[in-house]
Image (cartoon, rainbow, N blue to C red):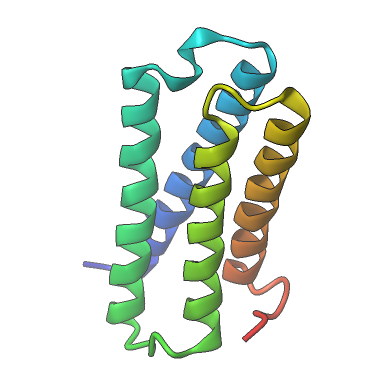
Length: 124
């Protein structure tokens, strides 16, 4: 399969994940009970797993070492995105704490995207 097509698919999935995250954040701020509904959680999880899995596959296809700073920083950023988002979007937190954690998750995602487009250098 053409690696260029896979990279474009990865980018498209990343955009979908970002949109879902933003929509869930808006729902959280609006105190919607649907923020953590089974359907919304399933869709978010499926696309995040697809994003991670396709990224790992592309890394293997390009024969990148997982000790490489590029890959390592992207993986850590995605894990931080998931962790901050998971905590922020749970019910029971104050809106100030949830919003702060949600913004940290958004920052982690944007940071990973900027590394992926080679706009900025990875930390490691």
